[in-house]
Length: 224
Length: 280
Image 1 (cartoon, rainbow over the protein chains, first blue to last red):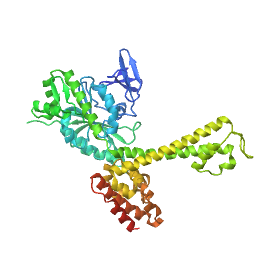
Image 2: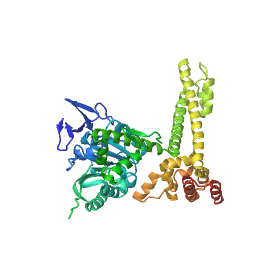
Image 3: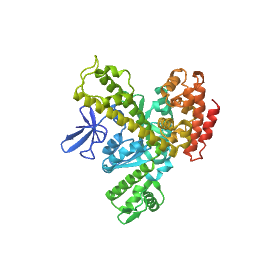
Image 4: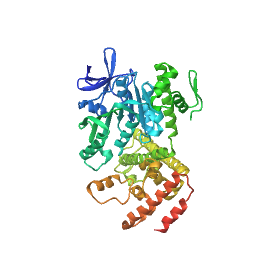
């Protein structure tokens, strides 16, 4: 197991892995690998957009140990479980998901991981979970919705600290099936520029079709 | 709903919600720092974490339970009945082919019920000029085939009955206008009754014809006239040139009915259906 330049993420040959927080259990039937005392979970980039972005050498993936992460669109917990590995025991991952069916699967993952906190709520109605989420260091958003840029900006205004990082997966097909993906990505970038500093962006092409992954930093508000 | 109070050490909360409210009071109403204010209560990170963890799980489980609606079950049942239809058909075709090897004279396009009856009466031996000798092992096999098909037909009938009572319990108007089975099918395609209520009638008209619709949007072919709504007797019996028009009218009545059902309105299904019949 070799360290990568991303904190908490390891490599074995050409495959990604994270240190398993919940020893002996795998989340989505991924392979567990033992290396000395530690146990690692292999990370399948075809099933996780963050994994795919790291495989494509995106700059600025900077989730530290002990970070508070707000994860919007957690689904059944594939990527959140790896984020939970990265932030470690001291971290907090608040997993927001709208669909009760997939969150049911995540509840079982969260039961054995003490740093995962599931919330059943719609990311569009911030008021319904305002009291459940503290100020966060990182926001990760992967929601297949036409208004996903809007949702991100509103959540960041509410929950993200100044200078906090944002990881944002855009699926052009869910914004408009018929339009050209390049055009959509340009529009999204234009909107993002007014709120964030864009650190890096990458197409996820061999792993996911018509997806763009953004790494953003919230602009610091200067006090007088 | 969770009724027992939620204990943690000395603190007792009626509900997860009140726990957060307590946190908020102690932190002076600043929502953003409830982890910090929680530290003031628990004075120990591990304790705070296990409290919060338990609390979020409980709250989420409760919300998941509350999110149940009868339309989820209805769409599972309608999909299941369609799957069973397919299974019955494949079983029937295979069984009748095997049966035909031994009794080609009787075979001549038997329908399901006749096939089951014939197989049940069958005995070991040879018949006619073309058939093979029917041995004991194959006979047992054929009989268990017919038994399975019979059971599946029974299961399907039970499911249909269930769908009818279920649909009449929460979507009376829609079931009256479209018929229980078609109403359930449309809800399952829309995702839920709530999604269906948010749809304009022009979308309901082409539900189930997504492939043709998106082909139309992409490359400008002709738009589809109807989706699953063609199963409705009024649309199905219409002349070819009228089908699009009837599909549109039925869809508009269905949209009205769905909205009434969702917001617990009165039963006006009869009136809606009558208006439909008049326009024929």
